[in-house]
Amino acid sequence: MFDILVEFFQEYYYWILSLHIISVISWMAGMFYLPRLFVYHTRLDVGSKASEMFKEMERKLLRMIINPAMCATWIFGLALSFGQDSWHAGGWFYIKFSAVIILSGFHGYLSKWRKAFERDENPHNEKYFRMMNEVPTVLMMIIVFMVFLKPFS
Image 1 (cartoon, rainbow, N blue to C red):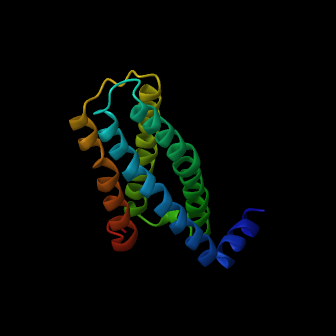
Image 2: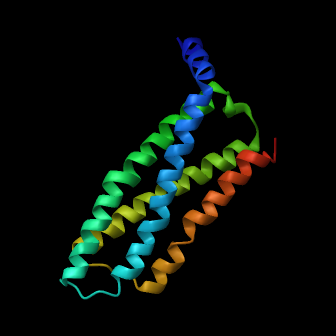
């Protein structure tokens, strides 16, 4: 059974890779934009019309774009890793995989912070979210360098 799956992943490698890249781009776009929305949301008065609009924007961005894109990224990424037997590729793969896990954890924090805004209980200031806005960029750089340079092979 496992051999059949590996053969399938190898046969459709470029389709799976294309879908993986599309889902990664969508996920990263949301991961860059949501913390930026939080930066601007911190400036708004609780209960204001603008604050309520930001709540809706944040909720829809997370539920309609970021969450599905992350799930698709994981599905297609795991398919690629099994089809190419990346689990034996060397240290670069494990560094990349660890960065993806950390990025997924950061995704969870974004969800937690969105819920705090929803309840009008955000404990963080604008500067905090400006700094957090850089986390996905750093992780993306690590992931891309590992995939294309393959150090520690």
